[in-house]
Structure formats: structure tokens, C-alpha cells
Amino acid sequence: MTVPLIDPFQRAINYLRVSVTDRCDFRCVYCMSEDMTFLPKKDLLTLEELERMCSTFVRLGVEKLRITGGEPLVRRDIMTFFKAMGQHLETGALKELTLTTNGSQLHRFADELYDCGVRRVNVSLDTLDPEKFKRVTRWGRLENVIRGIDAAQKAGLRVKINAVALKEFNEDEMITITEWCAERDMDLTWIEVMPMGDMGEEDRIGQYWSLKDLRRELAQSYTMTELSERTGGPARYVRLEETGQKIGFITPLTHNFCESCNRVRLTCTGELYMCLGQEDMADLRAPLRASEDDTLLEDAIRKAILLKPKGHDFDYSRQVVDGQMTRHMSHTGG
Figure (cartoon, rainbow, N blue to C red):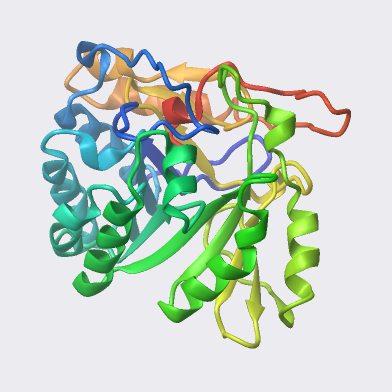
């Protein structure tokens, strides 16, 4: 029997988030600079290597696999990877295969994703105003995302909206977004902006809207019931009694969620980050390519898990961005 992955704080690591590309067809102001330099394609793991890497993690006890980017659906032939991972669902080794996307390409792949065993997708959407959407994504078109959401729901995929809380940008849309999600039977998760990478002229302190404030404002319009539910991620949930929908809050700044962290993140170049908010990482590409046998890779994964820290160091409390990461969110995969 394979020994499960246990970190130094006795947390079982059974959730892997995999960035299959650092490329994206948007340039969201909190995620990357407008003039991004992306990795040479030769530096990326091939789809076959990603399949082998993820299959090794599944063999070591990972039960939930979330595919991220960049924008994962812009990677050429990405459906071959989803089909390969879907085989682990059929055997029961993998309990869930999910996707986080900006929605721009979802209309093209929704049916195939469902056929591969995907049942839930998270769509990043911070505003319902077309002009504001264009401004926050720099290159995006809201109508393409809505078309993708339509296609996903038609295919049978459960859609959850992820909205980054941005001060003086979408504060006035809090109720509008909530009601829109309720009308479409979609859950909603609000996320505090995280200090990841140089945004050029974007001001991190200026972007930051505490979810404590958002929750307080939301409570003025809805009756909120705290939920004990956990989905394997960092969100804490409430139910809005008036609509019945579930609202999540990911609060790395106002409430550190690290004590129950069960996940690690793999980049498209084979770097394993044990924590989103720490720079330490392990190179898994070298042992992967060193041998066709997976023994070296398994040993490298186990050694990396033993280096997983207790938590991150993000901090906005002193009006400076302490704990800021030099890498962009698109590099690590959210």
C-alpha cells in the first residue's frame, strides 16, 4: 500500500492544483502586467509529461485535481490531457477533476470537459459591466465569457463564479453580482486580492478591499447563515437565506486559512510550490526527465512535501505590501 503524502504539520496532501500554461488571452490588472514576457514553449512540460506527473501524484494519494493557468484552455491539445486524467476518475483513484478558467474559451470545450468527467468549473468574473470588464481584463470581452457560462451550464457543468474584490471597482456591484448568480443558480466566491508579482503601475494597496467590509455590507441586504462545509479549498462559506445560494470568502489577508491547507501547486515548468505565499519550491522536472522509472520523481515529491511551511506571510496591515511574491499569479496557477 502506498504511503500517503503527509506534511510536517500532519496535514494530508490530497489536492493538487496544476498550471498547464502561463499564457492567457486576458491581462487582468491584479494577475499580470499588460506587457508580459511568457515562458518559451520549450521550457514547459509536455502534455505527456504533465500526464505522468499528475498520475504520480494520484498514485501517492492526491484525490482532487484542479487544472489552472494562465488560461488552461488556450493550451493546444489540452483536451488530450483532460481525457488522460479522466481515466483516473473511472478507476476511482481520483475523486474530482475540476477547472478554473476565465471563460473565454469555455464555449468551445464545455461538452468535451463534461465527457472527460469534469463536473464543476470555476469561472473568474469580477464585473458585469462590459466597459469595466474590458478595463480590468485589458483584452477581454464580457460577451465571450457569458457565452462560455451558457455553454457550460447547457453541458451539465456546475458553474461557480470567482470574483476578486477590488476597491473602488466592483464595490458597487456586490448586490448585482450576487443577484445575477442567484438567478442562474450559481454559487459565488469573493477573493481578496493577493500580493503576487509586479503589476507595473497598478497599486496593490489601492486595489485591496477587505472581505470583512464586504461581508458587513452583504449582511445589510441578506440573512447569512454560517456553513461548516469545506470543499478542500481555502474558502469559508455562508448561505444567503433569501436566495438559498452559497457564498464563499477567500481571505488570505483578513483571515489566514493555512491551518487546514491540504494542497500544493505545480507549475507548467515542473516547479512544485508547497505554499502560494512562499517562494520556496522544488524542481520536479529534473527527476521526471532523469528516468522513465517514477522512483526518483516519487522521492522528490515526498521530500518536497516535508518542506511545506505552516502558512504564508501576506500582510497589508501596515499600508505596505509585506510578504509580496515576486512571481505572478499566472505563473503559480492561482
